[in-house]
Image 1 (cartoon, rainbow, N blue to C red):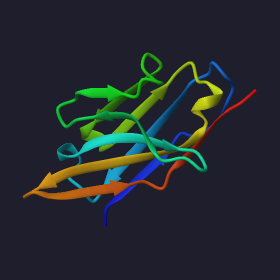
Image 2: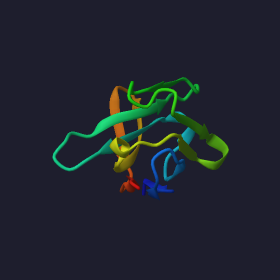
Image 3: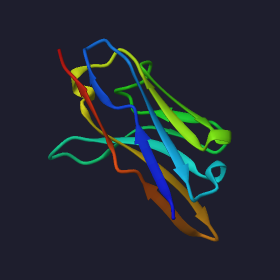
Length: 119
């Protein structure tokens, strides 16, 4: 059974930092591209940051220079370091793992973790 389990969300003041973690099980983690998405009520889920199996990262323009995605394949874990947080970063953050095998997509999601940025 595939599981992606996020942790590390919470309430933080503007300008503060949080580190999200996503632990994967039931998959060969190193073969999956990993990503962090976020969603607020009434809006579509949006990509925040992604990292390939080779370690290449890309970011949404809104978080560039403030967020850093990384992965530790030995621990089957992907991280999202969030610095200089802003109220507009408030959302539920979801971990995603995806790959293609023999042309077929494999796409998995975690249950989400709430991040609230407020004074």
